[in-house]
Image (cartoon, rainbow over all chains, first blue to last red; front, top):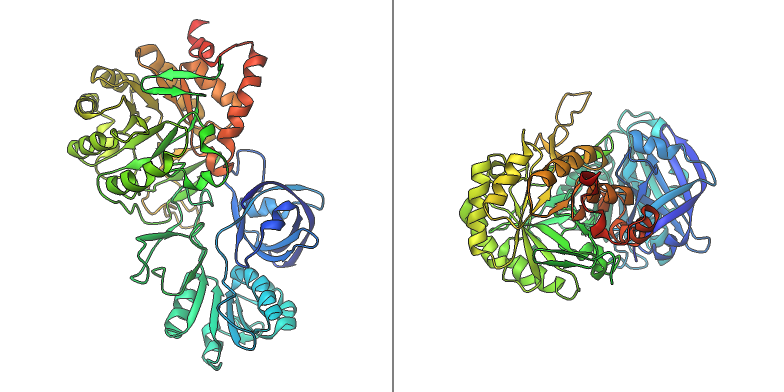
Length: 258
Length: 304
């Protein structure tokens, strides 16, 4: 069920340059079932900024009714969000969208998780779920530079983790694809979230593997009504188009024309 | 007696609040959130003769207290709307106002004739004001003679009353309003969006792929209210007012300026429950202002 209403800030912490980790508490968490879903947040009760901000869910704790998001404060909306303090209220609509399917891989098998920048967060909940299931995750996480790397230890605790930075200031130098070329292709399925060129590169690298990709697109309503976030499709689906917010954000590889 | 009820050509509304076309799809998304039968009516997404895939993305950009959009009339086309969307909506006790769009007069006529026969379509909203398509749309809405002729052509074939949706992107909106009234329009809906551009300040590039988009949201309310106020003085057919409505005070203002009912657009994207919330707040607001019914409030600014 999609809920709308206030949630309370449990904690907010800057974890890298302009990267914030925000934990909220409230009933919405009861409906957060799939890794890879997102919430649509109002950062102010004023008319400016007007629209909600879609932010992906990075971890869910149903026992405490808390969930966590990791986001980059770059525009006015996310900067306002980063100023929220413990005890403040945030208007949350969600959970929204369709997440990563974890039934595509079995215990004992390997799954490849590839994240780029602010696309890394939803892979954390995904990886936790896979590990719980007995799947062995391999993480390849790309960032611009050392100062924006986050959750390296969190991912290491879950499994094999390769960090890549464009400028080489931390981990491997280059793009995630440079590391992927050196890895064995013994995984059953791959999952990815990050910039579209990265998703496109993965589709080309693994044409015969089952893959699930999380896309980003400028959104309006977040529930499928406004047609702002449509993407062109390929022959792989009968649909003329898909909406990232309500048909996605996660799609099987090859469905969205990249 | 239902104090919120409003009777308009073709429409017996249980309350004067409805979602605006293009901001509510064909209702499916919002039906997951609340019972659509609560609404006064639903203005469904513009329907064209053929399937339209709309404009390239980005299609929306936020602006101060508003947003620009250039969706480009994306819709499944007349046949699919008749076969899938309207029958699905028929499960709800709510009149549908079908927004009709096209490139040529013949397109409007063909869509209007067919869609006006659907049992739950109680009125048409002739879209002569979409700013985001290269042909049709706004080109019909900026010349009074063209607007009048199109209205007349559609009136001839429509089985239900015809409302014409006016563009604010004109010098004299009253002139267009009078023209469509002369063409036989049963009512007016106004306003559509205001043409705008947002630039990426770093690069100077337009943010929206279509370059221009239609401005909506609270930012346009004063313009919309002024236009409703002006048109209400010049025509005798009813007006459904819209443009930046998001609070109960906005609803009151549009009714006062001369709208008989109102539509809520962009606010649905900010708060998907805005329409039922406004409907719930309306009786209390009437009490506060000392009015028994919605109808008493309509046009009161002109009687002061």
